[in-house]
Amino acid sequence: MYKFSKYLIATALGAAAFAVSLSGQADTIKVGFNVPLTGFAAADGKSARIGAELAVEQVNAAGGINGKNIELVIYDDQASPKESAPLAAKLITQDEVVAGISGSYSGATRAAATIYQENGTPYISAYAVHPDITRSGEYVFRTSFMGEVQGRAGAKLVGEMMGKKRVSVITLANDFGKSLEAGFKEKAGEYGIEILGEYDYSIKDREFGPIVSKVKAESPDAIYASGYFFTAGPLVTQLREAGVTAPVIGQEGYDGEMFIKIAGDAAEGVIITTSLDRDSNDPLAQAFITGFQAKSGYPADMVSASTHTAVLVLAEALKQVDPNDKAALRQAIASTSINAATGNISFNKLGEVKKSVQVQVVRDGGWHHYAVISDPVLLAPPEE
Image (tube, rainbow, N blue to C red):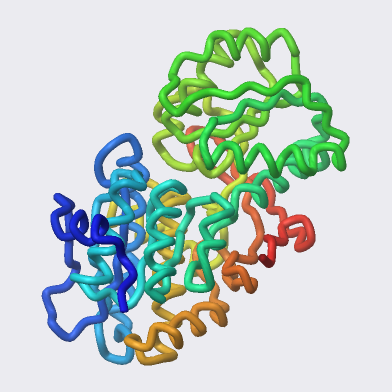
């Protein structure tokens, strides 16, 4: 029995959402996909959609799921919880999807995860970082790092691998930024890092004069700054224009062509923790990078790689069970271990991914390999 409130059902049935079916065939396996196609996160949403579509095309071309094609049903959630929750209800009740994938940010993903969990339908978060996503319940999984894990990796990168000890911390004041900050601060002391100052900013901010002035006065060895491409681009530009030369260490929110376009020459030398190694020799990674470029017309990024991975995880699980048996499908996802563009993917009992962290640097106008962090203890996600 479905467990939606009357409000959610009414809103879902009346939602003015954008939906796309990748297959007109009746004999298909439907998979829901919520993604921001309009609004502030639309650039990431576009990459996420193309990454997911590429994976579906590749799976179907290889024979699909025991002869049946995957049909990806796409709705625009605008990266908004108010949109994603009713859309999750619509996907389950009207579209009758066997599972869902989030190509969206943490707030929207958390809201949808609750609906999927309440109705015993598997749901995979491709790249949203908030720790409470998988804590929605046993039907929810994540194929990228939770924020705290990536923050811990950032501390190791800055304090041990780069040898930078005096650090200014600049934090985007939302789920994404705060979880990264928490992980970084948790491990900073272990790597001899002294935090000189901590500065928060809003997702709407594009002018950072007061923060830049304070960081310049601190003269740090390095700057650990969370943000998305549309905030990190202006921030890094203004730091460099003010004469701040300390290396900037960011995270996967920077990952993509748009950050480099916005920051221009100021992007050179910026280092991030992320999921995709552009210089990987792995055939799967190279096939994804080449395939994405051909399909999209621009270079692959973290969100496209992560959504591509999420679809492949689900496809592998679907091959093992009756797709309509959602409990069996949930167990098959939990037991999955595959190689993908973002590395070897397996899950712990909370549904969190276990894999290495890639470190990329902007060099000659593009993202390139800097290092890889494979410490299984440092990167271990929580089990409950």
